[in-house]
Length: 306
Image (tube, rainbow, N blue to C red; front, side, top):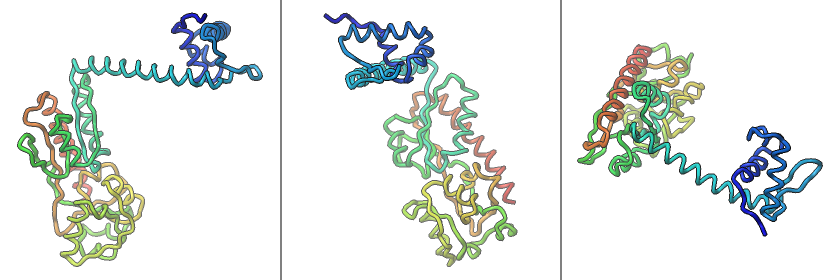
């Protein structure tokens, strides 16, 4: 008749499977190697199963051993979920903040904003979700998000939106590009030039295309990317030039040339929040951090372009 297994035997078994050897498993559980071997032996005896084959002094899990490990791992995963839930409940006592951000701002900018916010509110669990503006809008309306940075205002009576750094689009060029000698880049300068474009189906690409078409400029599109950080990285790598919002340049500003673009036009980002936010104080603080960071980035980027 099999006896009840104990938790220490199960921990020893799991450790041997995951770390590969008795000695390594013993070290991780802070027990002696003979004690670890005894735990494994007792487990096999109590379970009435051969869980390991002994091959040249090493343990190799049998098919039954691996089946048992899969069940144990599933149970331990459930325990980890409970531990995470307990930690989340503890953190909820200090507050949580869920923020949605469109991919264009998911790089250096949101990192700086969040670092500034968390530095002032170290007890807050801040979650950042990078998704499309439509997904973010739905998350706000469903109260899954507390604040958001999106490409255009969300048309919903329960959401308040404001422009974030309403500045004209700039032209960025690889270091050493001949057009870098100009104080401003005109649409005509881009005609025929190697160009890094946003995905054709994106609103940003359509708006840029309308401006260039209106001025008879047809760039030579050599690369297409679907997010601003990727566009900027390709420009920094020397692939071509691009038109982007100044906030997008922050992560590569030391590796590209920034110039004003003529004619001027804007692609605005929006700060959004719920009117009846469950934690209005934290949302206000996060939006303040976003505004302050945007102002700093604007000054640095636009000064570099002058």
